[in-house]
Length: 128
Image (cartoon, rainbow, N blue to C red; front, side, top):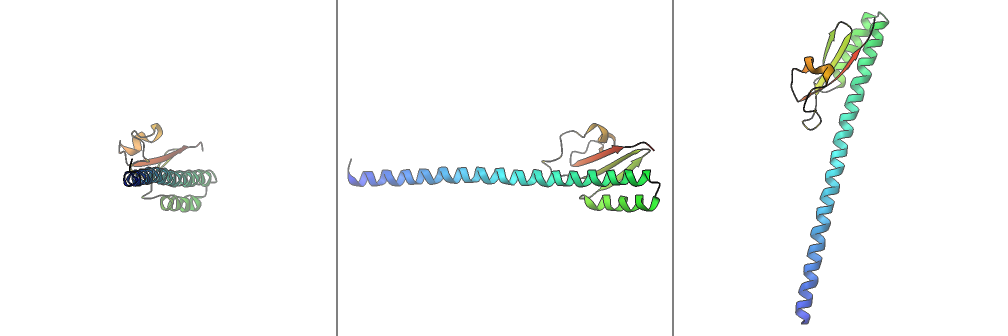
């Protein structure tokens, strides 16, 4: 091979290595963004579970003011929160990102979500 042909091969190898590195970098970036999305969804679910648990405890303490206070906080803690109380069941629903909401609603929230796939919920039953 001539010296000029070898120089062209080296340039082709460098271009191929750069393309491979860019593809790997995009894959790592995509994985990091997915982890961040799931961490955010997990934090929202934890806040919702905490708020519903606090409401149940306030209800058991027979304090209407505390229950109303936690009801307002629960709706504010999650995006587009909606709280429903049926007997001894608290259900807190919120708008979930499209990829975080499950394809089917959770069994305890099925009646509350009415089959809407963009909602997520936490339900807590308690005995008075």
